[in-house]
Length: 105
Image (cartoon, rainbow, N blue to C red):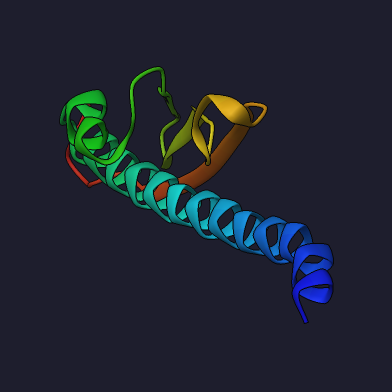
């Protein structure tokens, strides 16, 4: 039994690490989507989109806002390392749009 456990343990640890990595990456994706939605709505209202999106995002994240006469768009890009410095960095991106509020110029 000990030999089988010793042979299977690295595979079990690898599967657990992959699961933690996936959960962390998905969690950051949800945060980026929330930030993009909030930033787009804030831009459509004429508010500061950067300040509204900042609480959702980690250090190094970027919020880009653009608008035309009808729609405000926000793109959020967040670099993450789901398991810390032991894993390579990845970039999470989310986009959102909101119709411009009437009466804003």
